[in-house]
Amino acid sequence: MKNKGMSLMELLAVIALLGILLIITVPAVSELIRSSALKTFEIETNNILQAIENKKTRNSKFDVTSINIETMPRLLGISNSNYESITVKIVTDKIYITIVGKDKWAGYITCGTSDDVSVVTSELECL
Image (tube, rainbow, N blue to C red; front, side, top):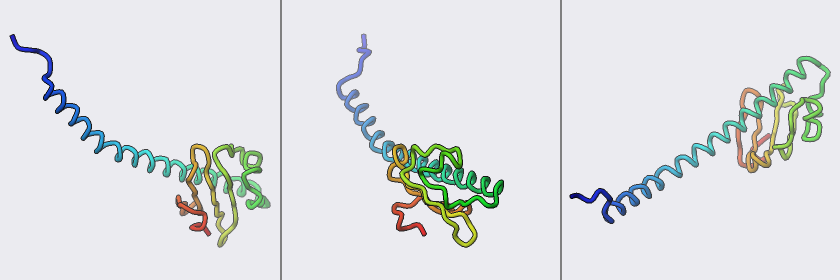
């Protein structure tokens, strides 16, 4: 009668194979998670820009530069809980925003217009 269990060598081979798979997949999965988070932060920035543009369309006298971390919830109805700072200005007749994230967006910075929002590593890279 044959032994139905695994030999020590077979068990070690399976463990080694699992180790190799982890070494290969963990960095790839980590990068996928990071790039997804960056894209989501960029999309949130575009959503905030869209809210600002909608407010400006409804009220042409609305001063977009009055939006900051303290006024955003009241003026736009958007929570500021995941943002450290928000700066809005007009650059060549376009609304330009810089957002510094915190909590779930800690370490992320976005800046740009609705035509071109970028995630950057430093506010110095923004206008």
